[in-house]
Image (cartoon, rainbow over all chains, first blue to last red; front, side, top):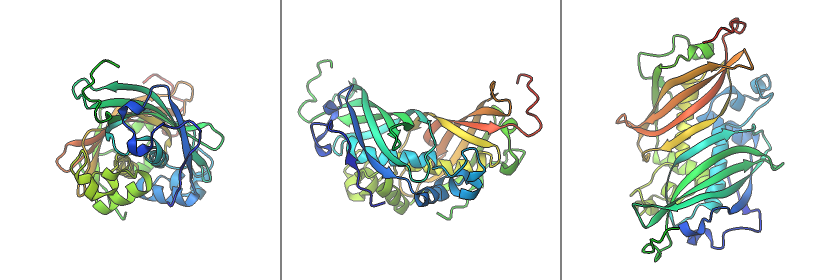
Length: 173
Length: 173
């Protein structure tokens, strides 16, 4: 996919993604990154492998379908979301795992030619009670189309290491 | 991916996927389908495009990481889930859309060589109040590894057309 993705707003983390730890995810912070354009070829290729329903694989049949044309698999949109999230948002050094996703909603169909960007909002960051070296970050995730309206929304959860040297500090935050 | 996926249990829908409507999704029904094996090559290819974190893209680095080796992107596992869901479970004629997913949980890492299957449980099926030609089906989805233990769980929601000719029957169900 030779995609080059970029920071879209002036507000970005104070620290680069290679030196970003639990403490750097501050509730209320909003960041935007982009962009990836979904071509018809990309849509057909993804769907042929992972989501072979005619609204995603057959432009002719899709024209008669509920969306009046070909649309991307919702899981393809999730993949593009993840690409932007991994390129720009989630730490390259502190990320341990993601237990899951809540309230994933495909709120608008994605069509060939749509250019997608990512908006992340840190919703909650709390230290682990049982493991003082880490914390849990909840992020509100929106994938936006070129008109700025969301096509996908979800809440992501990430487990991140605290900045080395701070793990002994167990005062409440 | 030249994958051939199959019905794993004797219990399957009474009607083929090309003639399956809202009424055919009966709460309590459980079905199993499989299987897709995740090769290291598949894992690296998917992650290179959609989830370039070293635990998914770099076998050497992953060995030092939190899982002690390369694991598949959770979104790749979602893609494999969708392939089995589209091949076997969701109607090819009645499916209108999916508004989203709830409580997606990656409960165990997926490693190269793991062979995945799908278990679906119809949890709820209710007619639309506002649109008498359709209904909403909630499905408990589990992706199982070769040992029968889940690696991914979620609740999927699908909007499906009612069987043609039944749409005037608005008695409560």
